[in-house]
Length: 219
Ligand code: AMP
Image 1 (tube, protein in one colour):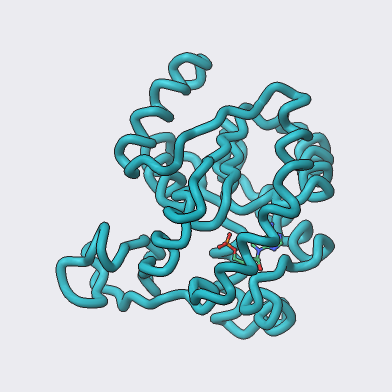
Image 2 (cartoon, rainbow, N blue to C red):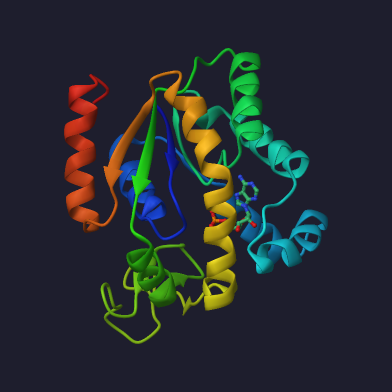
């Protein structure tokens, strides 16, 4: 199954992608996670994108398209994948279709559009904590770790992402809103978009997804 998860930062895409990854046994490909890894390892790409990411702006298409093309060329994507954070612009969506065509791997099955209200997004992002080791998300209030700032699953250190701070969050939402309509239109024309109420809890959203896959004969 080839899925794209679309939606504003804080809509719960990453959380659902991680659960789906375990259930469907197809890789969760988060371009944000991949870029953060490059920054952490201080690679050439990481050095180039750090400032852009810290400001909440988008990394140029030529850089991100190369990252995704390399990733989709790997064998583990043959049975499908869950894309989280890519594409973010119509131009990236067109590139993605070209890559899939080149890889002869068939088109995208569904685009899950996580629609969340602004108040909830800001509340989620400002409290989000991420494990430095395994990448699982917690929330200071809604999903607190059992031990302060320690991951329940791997004992890794939790941290707040630099771009989850208030000013950057506002810019990320602005950037998202500028780009999302043409992207939704692009996939709407292919009748692939299914809207998910992302204000719901992670468990409720997951149940909705399972029912949707059944209805679409994808489970
Ligand atoms: P995310 O973790 O998806 O919120 O991404 C964090 C940051 O990585 C974004 O604010 C962008 O700076 C960069 N980024 C991730 N994916 C993309 C993409 N598809 N296009 C451009 N920039 C991206």
